[in-house]
Structure formats: C-alpha cells, structure tokens
Image 1 (cartoon, one colour):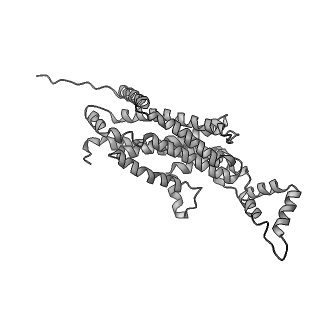
Image 2 (tube, rainbow, N blue to C red):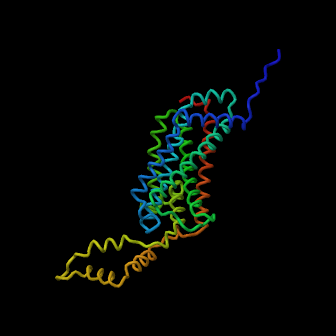
Amino acid sequence: MDMLKIKHRGRVAQTRIYLGKFFRMFIFQNDWKVLPMSAVIAGLVSFAVGANLYKTMEGTLMGSFALACICIWNGFFNSIQVICRERAILKREHRSGLHISSYIAAHMIYQAILCVLQVFITIQVLNFMNVVLPSKPLITAIPVLDFGITLFLVTYCADMLALLISAFSRTTTAAMTIMPFMLIVQLLFSGGFFSLPQEAMPLTNLTATKWGLTALCAQGDYNSLPMVSIWNSVVKMKNIEYEGQRPVYEMLKYIEENDMRDEILMETGKQNQNPDYAFDRDIVIRCWKWLIMWTVVYVALAIFLLEFIDKDKR
C-alpha cells in the first residue's frame, strides 16, 4: 500500500498565512491598544522632560534617556506575550509541519510595522508638545528621518528581545515576571545617565538604551549646547553672606549687567563635552550597527529555542 504523501506549504506561504493571522489579532484581539498607549507615554515624557531637550546639555541627556526608555517600553509591550500565549498551538502546528523560521519571520514583519507606527506617533506627539527635535542631518538629508530611524532601531531591538523572552517563557505570567528585570537592566546600564563602576561599563554594550542614548545625543549635537547646572547651583548661593557682604550676588549682578551669562554657559558646556556624543556620522552609524546586531542575535536565539519546542517538557 502506497504511503500518503502530505505536502506542506512552503516557508513564504506560511509567513503570509501567519502575517494575516497577526493582523487579524491586531484588530479583533485588541492588540491595537499598544498604539494609543505609545502616544500617552510620549505625551507624559514630553511634558516631564521635553522643555530642555536639545537646548541644554543636561536637558538633552535626560531627554534622550527618556526617549530611549519610551522605545524600550514600547518594544517590550509589543511582543512580550505574543509567543507564550499561544505556545500550545505553536507546538501542535510545529509537529504538523510549521517552519519556525516562517513563524518568526511573520512576527518580524508584523512587529516592524508596529514599531514604525509607534515611532511615527511618538514624533507627532513630540511635535504637538513643541519639543525641539534635531535640526541638522547626519546620515540622510532629513534630520527628523535620522531621528526616526534611531527611535525605530531601539524600539525594534527591544521588541525582538521581548520576542526572545516570549519564546523562552512557558506562560505569559513567566514572561511578565522577567520583563521588569530586563527593563531595569536596560535602564541602569544605559552607559550615560547613571554613574557606573568602570568595570561595569562593558556591560552597557549589551543594552539598546546605551546605543539609543548615544545616537540621540550625537544627533542633537550635544557638545555644542550650553551647560546650565553649574550656573543654577551658583544662583542658589547668591544670598550667602560673608563678613556682611554677598560676593556671589555681586558676581552674578556683574555678569547679568554685562550680558555675559550666555557666554559663560557656553564656556561651561565646552569644558564638559563628551567625545562619545560628538556630532559625528560615524558615531551614529556605529550605534545603528550595534542595534541591528543585537536584533539579529535575539531573532536567531528565538528561532533556535523554538526549534526544540516539541521537546520542551516544562
């Protein structure tokens, strides 16, 4: 008796099928909620730290860190549960001939579209909130496009990391338990916002926040901006008296009367420049390469883990 030959669909066909499934889930299972949530987060961050972004060194560092955090948050919530919530279905379909590479490819395409929409929404919210964006191009001829590419790469890198976590986790509860820890790692090891021991600095290369923060500061020409924190600290001391005199007040009065404040702020900025944030095309490209590399690593690991899903007895 001849054995029946079952012909499975090819990888491209399977990718199309799953891509259609994901878009239906986007509409009918309320996955679209990540888009308005990204607008709310961008609005809150713009309100909190947007006033001095790309205006002062301190404001740029804080604002760039906040923007990188927006991207990490959006990326994580996009895909942290997408695989583990249908793990049993995936295991059954893999045994029936599903190519894991097709399944992950469909996720990659779908999540890339989602990330593009989130970046577009974030930029529109920033514009609506009158947040200053980079005005000088480095890679393309359009500054906001350079800015958007950086936001996309950070968001997509975080998205693929969350996809990897979802591939590893057996349940949605396990995935959501791991996520806060990964968020803390991304925030603490950003490499520029928090002071870390020198021996811990190599670990910052593992995070998307480090490369996003660096690229955003470089695109905003961080080293050409004034530094205001020292001036603000001196102003707080203006009423201190010494032997019946107020020397700090007299100094500040002299500076203001001679219109020297802006010059001093710029000089303070020059003395505190960071070569890592130089307005340099090569710096931004290096950051983009690191983000792309980690994205590829996360995708490869997710495929590798899911190839053994049939043997998973957890």
